[in-house]
Image (cartoon, rainbow over all chains, first blue to last red; front, side, top):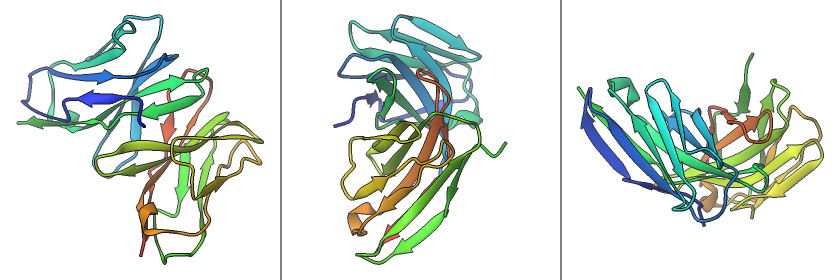
Length: 111
Length: 112
């Protein structure tokens, strides 16, 4: 069974608004990663947060991690049409050697 | 740098045929993995490798074999193709433990 579950499965917002996606997982992790996938393309690594970190920023991205609740969130601020994509969380286990993905959130930014 | 290169990009197989999906990376990455992506299922890990000569099973290994004879290459073999193996296959690599993966552009496989 898959480790991570994203919520919501689909999200549609207006350009300029903030988008928040959540990820829950089941077992202890070494780190949690977020990826973006544009339609029909490969995945692109966005950000990694280690199990001993609580928050991390990269440009318009903000990731939080709550290991007590086994959950993470990805916030995209000031969304743009180019942010339209699917976003996946992935958890690294077994000494960070094994990366397992959730089912993803489909984000649509409306102009 | 080419990054992670997957070939072929598209393939149609008949049930029972075998084939090898190729994956090569030129970044000297130790970790490599194979995933399949089906609609509504996200990505599922098939096999992964932490270095030349070392492989391990992921979530859905049945029907697939891998080997890692060199750091650069990590081919995925379908032993006897089945319609259930119709999917998009992604290869990915990572430099070190605990860092992000670089993905290839995928192989779209249809088994009829």
